[in-house]
Image (tube, rainbow, N blue to C red; front, side, top):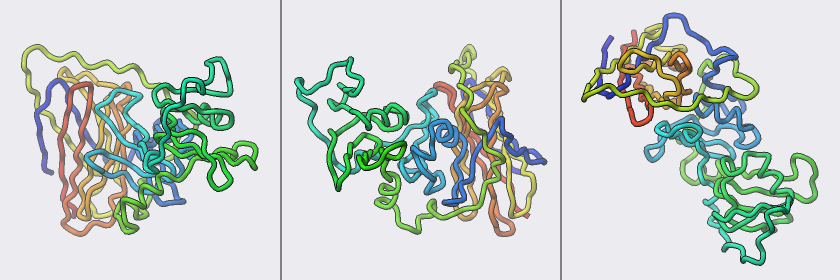
Length: 336
C-alpha cells in the first residue's frame, strides 16, 4: 500500500474503504443507476436531481460525470449539471446556460408593455427585461423557476405551430392543442449541446455498468444545515493530511466502496464539507461529485472497478472544500 500526503490549513480529510461494502441505505443514497441510458448519477448531482424532479426537468443522464474546462459536469437529455464544491449550499450544483446555445434573444420590453406587479398571469423580470405569462408562467413557477430555467431571454414566439420561449438554461415549448401536465415541455437542450461538442464515441457517453448504489431514497432530501466554517487554529499551523484507502478486494474486477471522513485540526468531525473524488484506472479516470459530509463528518461513494488487467495500479484522490479551506490527498493499490 502506498500513501500520499499533502499540506493543508485547518482541516483533516480521511478516506477509507472498508473490508465489507457498505451499500447505501434508503436513508443515505449516494448514487443511482439509470438502465434506460446506462449511466450513473452520483453524489451531489444525484441529490440535486432527486429533489428537483430530475426525470421531468432534466431527463435521463447521457454521460457519466467528467471534467470539462476544469469543472466536473454531467450531461442529461434536458440539461447539463455543473459542480462547484467551493461554493456554499445551495450553489454547489448549478444548471448550465444551455438555453443560450440557440443564439436567440429579444430586446427588453418597452415600459408600456411591462405588466403590473399584481397581475397573476404575468411575471416581469427586470434582470433580463422579459416576462413569462399564462401556461409558461405556470410551468416556470412549478418547475423550479430561475434555478432550473434561468431568466427568460426572449418573448413568446410561435414556431411550427407551437409557442416557444427561450430561457438562459432551457427552451420551453407550449402546445396549445394539449391540456394537462404535458402542454408545456422543456426541450432536449442537453442532448443538443452534447451532440454539438462531442462525437458519438466520446468515452463519457459509453454505457457503463451500475456502480452498486443500493436503493435510492424517495421523496425530498433533508434540508442541509447552515454552513459554518471551522475555527482556524492560532498561528500559521500547517497540518499533514493523509488519505487512506483500503479496498474490499485487491482483484481486478468488482465494486469498491469508499467512506470519506472530514475533520478539523483538532479532530472534530466537520459537516457540510463538499468533496469530489477522481479514480484513476488503467483505461482512464472517473469523476465523482460527492454528497456533503453529514453530522458525523462522513460521506460515501462507490464504483465498479471494471475489468482491470493483472498488476494494474488504481489510485483514488479526494479533494475536500470547507469555506476557504482545501484538503487533498491520494492513495494507490496494485491489482493482484
